[in-house]
Image (cartoon, rainbow, N blue to C red):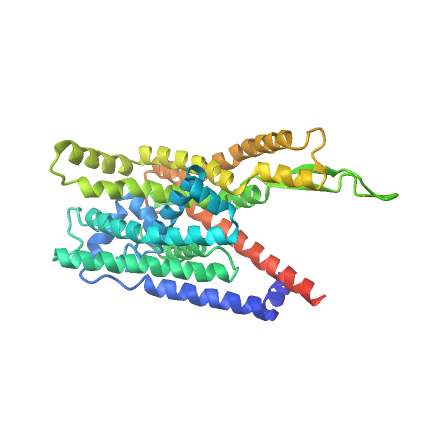
Length: 425
């Protein structure tokens, strides 16, 4: 391990990339402590403590909501915009063509995603202000129309600043920028959450602490096992004749298919969508139409109920595991590439049959990955329901993201190190 760290530090490019990324994360943490003026922080923290959804979002954002920071929305609006365009790429021909154009098409999609992030952040900031200010204890004092618009513009600018920061981090190839910002927020919130839990500790909480410790161990082991697990599909290559000589042939390689190709993206997508309906409902709580106001109130109540919230959360994680795998894994292209190279799966005809076979394997192993992610996501809710304690908010979901992002960072640094070693040779 120390030898590997020495190699990383001695490689100038990798060392500089890591230091620059660390500097950007420091800027992110400094921005998270820049509050919007005129906020009653004590009332805000009391409100977040009693709200499961917003409490979870506060953990992911690294406490930016509890400070009513200028970056309180984090990268949530950008993630929502990404979901919208990935859905559009599957149903709208124009966006589907862009997704197939390689890097140039991806750049255009990223540009459209950034454009959509601005109005989404503006609307979500309004909904968040209305949601937080609807509590029994006022959170924002003297909230005039002009002041509210000013706060909305400030929060939107903070979100776009984080999007820019995340893209700069991604360019350094030390992990995905957006995931790394969420990772940094979770890690930063852990000390304060654990400190609060220990300060309020009583002998009755011992069972809860033991359960959360077991969750942490199970999650770490499970994430490593599932993320590293893969199904190796054997691939043979037909012999090719060139003159009097033959080339290729035999079982030269295999096609690795990972159990969890989607990584932590389904968790992040699911959280974004779980938070979106109650935010939108805030627009209509005081609507003139009685049925619309009632619908908005019932929507907020529905998502604040732990049982309904847990079921919805599990189903969304399950769905997005399959959805994102379909976005990044294309059995048709793999089957076509194998056929062009003279490769085939033993016992399976090249072409359409190979495509169906690969799709069948992905669907089967995806079931394991989807169930695992879904169970990890709702595990803290199950423990809190069994123990009746909400002293610890960091649970399976947070641990899942932290471990998965750490593995991704390690792999990217490892690949860069390998490339530099090849260049030296």
